[in-house]
Length: 421
Ligand code: NCD
Ligand code: ZN
Ligand code: ZN
Image 1: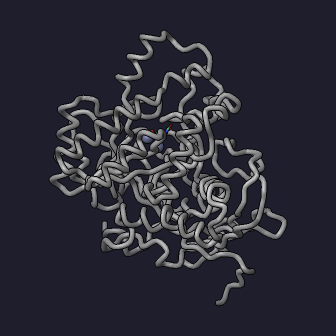
Image 2 (image 1 turned 90 degrees about the vertical axis):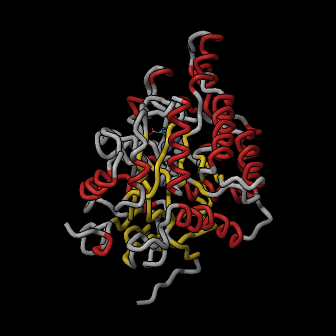
Image 3 (image 1 turned 135 degrees about the vertical axis):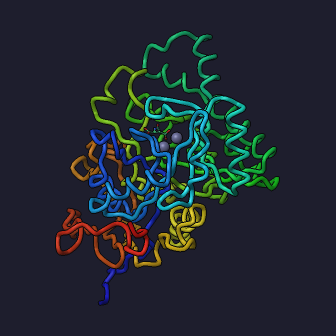
């Protein structure tokens, strides 16, 4: 069959290597059916899901059982990051087993991240074990010791804006400096998630230049919002690490344009409206983004690099959202693994279309978006997975197709990926 793309760009299916699809245990916030529809509407055909579920994901066997749970409801391909916490670094030995690609370590805790490695001795052990096993660690690098010092000094936060100041920049910067020191000592490869400050970008770039095996991710949220938006939009843009100030945002964009950033990850972390409307200190951090990431960052790129051709802008995004994540998480080469783009996952993208994100277009189960009312430049018109159209917009901009043409969900794993039971 031939496809008439109507002069639009044809891109490889994109990979979001940082999502929280909330299965199992948190499906009142999000579920796989909704989240994977949001994903294909945003041009994403593969996700790597985070382990902070209830219960948390710790072993290759659990990852396999989770895949069985998700199977038949997913429009996208998927793999999982395992979690490591407390005394037990055993998840590190499970990476590469079945659906587990990697391990995420939280250096600080918050509402939705209760499993933390705080003990310095334990942390050393995790870095050493990972280095010995040749594994890359994914890090949530914040320091709640710094947070509580500042809390004691300034007293309990009262309003929302004040609460944001209690998730200070210094907590993230201190944690990244510590990570670099551990990398220097043990030679562990690390990928730092959701870098949020100018100093983190400086430190990580300097570390990489000095030959340390470090890479980092930025999220669409830190590229799209600043602290000024936060005081306007309120707790909806509250996430961990927090949205920072304009100079931080400028530095993160510079890092994108200078190829210092390795991946974009949406940190798609939905919470219900009611949860987000709680008192500031009780509103959980996190916001949806798997549907918004690609068009939102494309919109920003048009503004930040107006002299680049549309092709150059899209090449930049394809590097950050397909090539690099495929490389980092072994999605393209390890035997029996996913091969994004190689099995006819692709996206038809209109780079010039201007459109507004309306509330009724939001596919996440949480039903809200911090990007509501945004005018975006560039729109996903159609998404194919394994050569089958799983998402399409009609000329008026309405979803006309979700799922397979015969109305069934595609099995998200290829039979060859599944070990015999
Ligand atoms: C994430 C969540 O809610 O799961 N929240 C967030 O603010 N980023 C957890 C995380 O990625 O740390
Ligand atoms: Zn995190
Ligand atoms: Zn996250």
